[in-house]
Length: 369
Ligand SMILES: Nc1ncnc2c1ncn2[C@@H]1O[C@H](COP(=O)(O)OP(=O)(O)O)[C@@H](O)[C@H]1O
Ligand SMILES: [Mg+2]
Image (cartoon, rainbow, N blue to C red):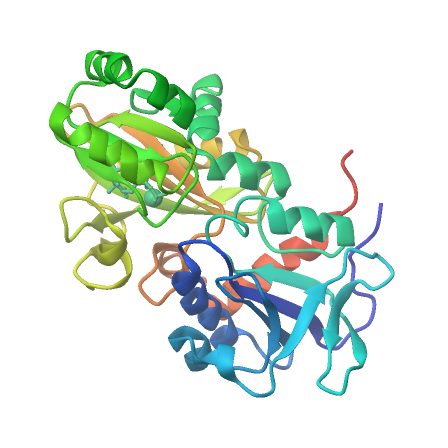
């Protein structure tokens, strides 16, 4: 086992990864800016590594504003850079304009990447190979939470209630569209939520109100993934908990999303500014505690570590609490729920980031035992 304890006092070299290849690239740039603006320079030497939409890695000295507006990519000081899987490097390799190679030792990585190739275990795998501590969930929990079909199956296995659902691959959907449509209508009723199994920020998600809307919804989901998840519509309040740590993990009480659109869409989340958050959610004390307990249970069931946001519906009428999904790298924009929930519990952002980094440093890497 490699110990991550930092014996020397003095600032930790923390590397922030941002941008990335997913449909949530823009959100990641804004989330990462929140980290830049809230990390104490006395405690951290912050290195910023941006990943462009086409997958180029660039060391940058961009400000949070330049990261957010995208102008960071054009800065003259940027240098191509990769994270080395070689444990002797324990960090990044920079390619200078003069044609030299420089090694940069990194103590901890903060992968502020949402969605595929960031929140799904891929970057986490590279960091495990490299033996570098990193913030957030490990490979398996990241991958499992990314895939809604796998996550739903595990929720069922662990007794975390979820609405009725089904999943089909592209090949299955193409082989028998009519049979599958009939089976879905029978099993789930209308409306049906149609989602790419692996996506985020509501990209590719459609509420199909009837059979005539199903084919287009499937086409949109398949434009984002080869596997599609179908869920019965839950008429309920949408509530989210921020969970931190592991064994024991601690959850906040839920906050509530008041969607500005018919459901909580991408534009609603990041552009329109119409959706609102209410903390705590408008629920009874007992219900708030029930959701909080279920969040910690769901987080543990899927093997989460570090942090995650657990999202639920509280069904109108029945009051049933149903998990929707777990986001292992939730948004950290100024309107995002995770940091707001923590702040409401008395943990301001700088302190939250310190805690997340401390958790990363405490967790053994290169140790699966
Ligand atoms: N089964 C469902 N019933 C009602 N609304 C849903 C359901 N599934 C998703 N939604 C709505 O769609 C939004 C996006 O779906 P979600 O599964 O959270 O995908 P993403 O991973 O893209 O955030 C949710 O925030 C919610 O507003
Ligand atoms: Mg969601």
